[in-house]
Length: 89
Image (cartoon, rainbow, N blue to C red; front, side, top):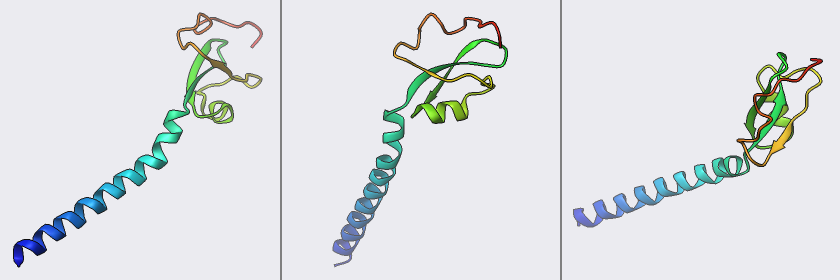
């Protein structure tokens, strides 16, 4: 009888752990799956990139973003504009 209880307890623990992992991934993966690379101009006038789930968050989290800079969705992160300098900043 002790063996049957032990197997039942182990099974219940594994199911609970599996559900906990599945629910954590369900919340984490959508934000990672929709992440995109955005280009922006920093205060030194350099074109830099930031990875974010949406354009508003990209603007909010871009390090050193210039006051009048927005973001541009890059379909190819190796785009030639990254690293360029922009005058008038």
